[in-house]
Length: 303
Image 1 (cartoon, one colour):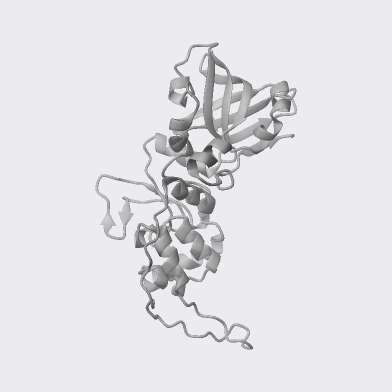
Image 2: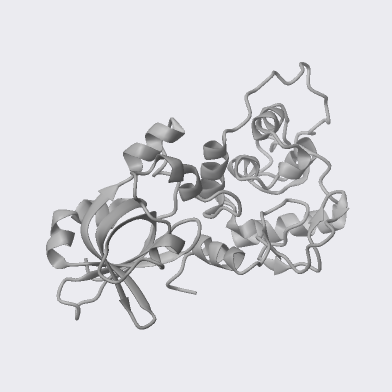
């Protein structure tokens, strides 16, 4: 839809009670589709009707044609039985296979992605015979593993969420602000709390940057859209504030904005006085880099 990235559309749909399901190598088409009911490998899920299933083409390292070819292989040869079966049959690159596992498209094979990655690493895939220009392939024998899978630690909630964003560009599960909420400065409002604040009050709001606009006709004003786990908030960044926080406005995915709340008819805005990156806090809480995996905000207008 142009202005809104896929991750934001997913969150907006979820807030309107639309069930959005992650990509799955055995259930997804190449594109997103509306299912007649939520399905898993074991069958339909009672009580969930007409969910949206994310398409395989959203998985990084996989193009639209590769996604369509994989779906055709699944339709002709039957569902993939496990990671090893997927690796042997799927006409995709090794990077795409790893993205499937890391991004959750193989979760139906087992809940622990590190275990699935270990199993994927043991699979021998068919290779071209040298000198045959790819026409002859070495046989990929379905040999079992020679050692048991070690006891690998499960992904944390942060690691799982960031893997979803990094490898599919979106997450149907936990929102970053859900995990950050307890660690934010005292007095930071959620979007629901902010919308109840009185006009003219000084507020603090934290969110993920969705889009930013700097129209040439706005005399240097930047308009930003931030999203937390409950909704979206418009920010108005005056020229002086933008110049003071240019790097934060243009490059940081997680922000804390302080300013004056404006309620004019149906319009709700925060006129920003100060901006702060939440990357250091997120890195501390998550015990690792966060910003690199989150989607970048869409930018419109001159810089």
